Length: 117
Image (tube, rainbow, N blue to C red; front, side):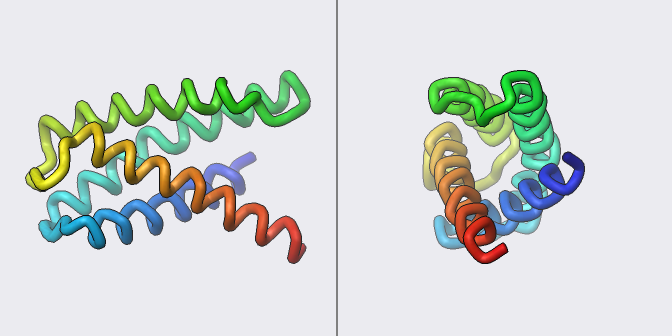
């Protein structure tokens, strides 16, 4: 379980920092904020999904994942609205873009590793 938390967080941080840079984020303080926000939200989300997986013995349904991801997008959007210097994109849309690409990027990497190993 710890391994999935660490792997998920590492992959999320890499993807979201790269995407933020592509979107035009340049200030170190903004990158630090993205890192800190994800250090808080990602493990909470992953652990919630792990606990659900443990009790129902399968991956939670797509709509449960979507609901939990939506909560994360809103929470991160609120933090970005109040603290992010980057203003080119609405903070909630910014959060949605980062989280969507992180989620699907993580799924792709997971599928690749599952097939190789």
